Length: 385
Image (cartoon, rainbow, N blue to C red; front, side, top):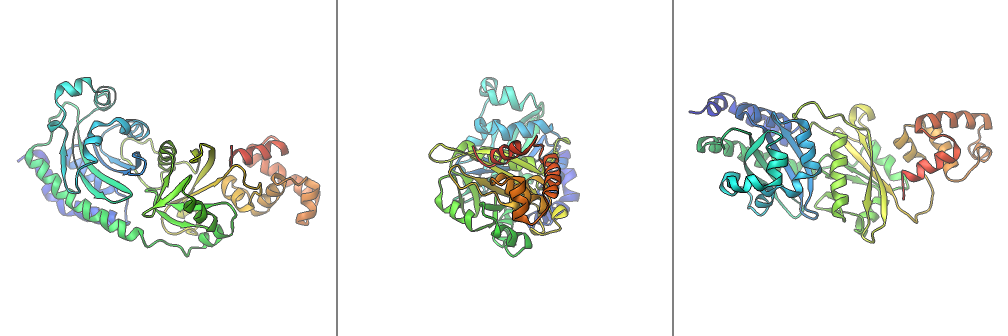
């Protein structure tokens, strides 16, 4: 019996329990993946989803000994030219792929993917399967060995197949539970009052809420649209930018490769409409611990945008969310950006001009604006091109 199988047998039931807890949303997917990677001494255990509409990654979770930058570089670029991915995508659910059966040493020696990415970062052979496939997404699970080590033996592959069968069932459970979104949260009521399109998505792009204007945006289908509950971009490059931006928010643990996950709270990105016009969008992390659970019990991202040609009517709620302003500061900033002078803003809000000027000093400090004109440019540049 191999060392892998000797390590697996005593902890098998515990790993299976972790897999189903992950599928039920009790813990992140990297928890069971970390244990599988430890047992198999893997360079990486990878669970990834490919958006079928655009052909780029929708998400990727990794666990193992591979460096953090390897996981990031794969998401940013190398998945586009991964020959193993190209072979795996057409497979049926439950079908298996062994890279050594498709790519000999001569191919590996001439492959940029192997020579410039995988081997220099310390990875080599993959054994994987298709867990899930629907109109929206293909989900794959793979075990990558370390460079210098042989492919998994037949016995080790059989053991990995046993675990993958549980991953497949657990992922199906997750898909079913995802359809029961928390639409009645306090935060959802707030977003319905805002004029900008507002969409809540999780780390796998599943939409849990959209306000009325976002619903109209999705139905138009010329920039973003909903496909089987997943947020997708019409433009392939835009779709890729959305994946990278969501990953940088780190809404949940996505990797055990090093310690390179430094979550951002906000991320701006450029999207392309069907007619070629550029649109600025923003993603804001909504974590239960910082929002007091107003947007539900799990971390989500707030997706919003402002399109060219739309009336310039900046919503105070959006400014408060985006720049961390108090409600009063947000109302003042909205008046200024919408064209009011400090004197006019004071009359409109029933405040003293001195109070407005004091608030503007605080607003400039929080937004980084150098003055009134700079504040207008900053807010509009954050919402449109």
